[in-house]
Amino acid sequence: MSESDDRRRHARAPIELRVEYKKVNTFFYDYTRNISKGGTFIKTSKPLPEGTEFIFLLVVPHLKEPLRLRGRVRWIGEQADPQRPRAEPDRGMGIEFVYDSDEDHARIAETVGHLMVDELGELAHAKLMDE
Image (cartoon, rainbow, N blue to C red; front, side, top):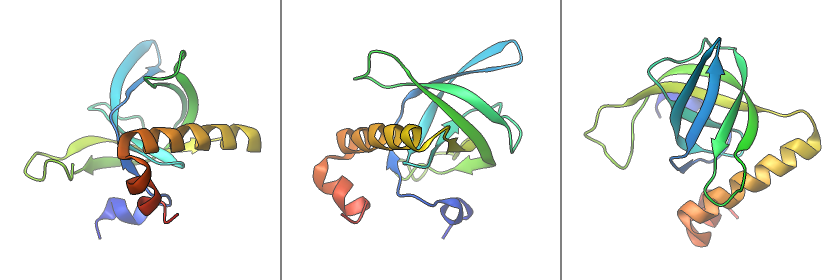
């Protein structure tokens, strides 16, 4: 088990979505590597410091507007891509979603669940989530 596997609380699905966020006066456009109902990994060469809370936009193809999320940087490091085992690991930051309310949590979990089904298909999603 790798160090990043120890940090995971929720099953993840590989997915690449555009992420937009601002640091001081600079906007960043990076991409996710995977997502779960609890968080995501953002590929970036300029990670924010651990513990940083920030607002980011997740550009989801079937939504009219980007999904506005609040996250906290849980860890900074590298993550290998199981689809490309010989490729260099991606540098980035592990993000834990932060929710304002139970309703906010339920809404984001439902949206992420739909993303995982769209990416993996119903059967693979059910197996991954032990459903």
